[in-house]
Amino acid sequence: AASDVYKRQYYMSPEMASGRPIDHRGDIYSLGATFYHILARRPVFEADTPLGIMLKHTTAQPVPLYMVNPKVSIGLWEIIQRMLEKDPNDRYQTYDELLSELKMELLAIQNRERESTDFSDHKEIIPLQEEVSSLQSGTSEETPAYTDTIPASEAVPDIESERRKRALAID
Image (cartoon, rainbow, N blue to C red; front, side):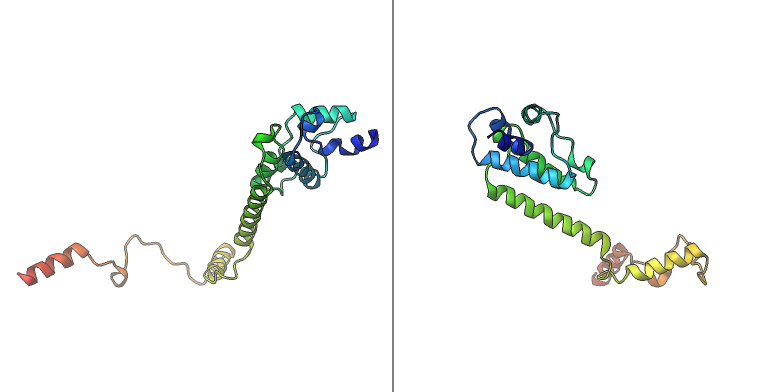
């Protein structure tokens, strides 16, 4: 029915829109269009008529998702972009391949979030942050003077001299 086409045009694969044979890769395209719609809060393509939207699915390139929603990682956009490829051969060929990529990106996102917000495992950062804060506020009791020499107690031994001494001792 015509109303079914009207409801589906936002998620319709290019091959379906142009009347070519479809397979599971068309579903991957439709899922990509759904992801895009959810994350952008707007469809991949818009036009005044259902036919105009279908035409865009076959010819137009979507606006990069990270430009519409800056919270979307470039990695996630690349996955969705591949799902939205016009040629089915350029899309993910299996659901397992797609799922594997999505899982890897989810882990990458979680790791980036953890690295940028969790300092509880880095106890050495807290004193450093306090030191920086005290220097910025001018409340530091003493500011260490800069020297370009290393105190003798912290000097690294001259390995070559040690080797020469041992060689002479052996002779």
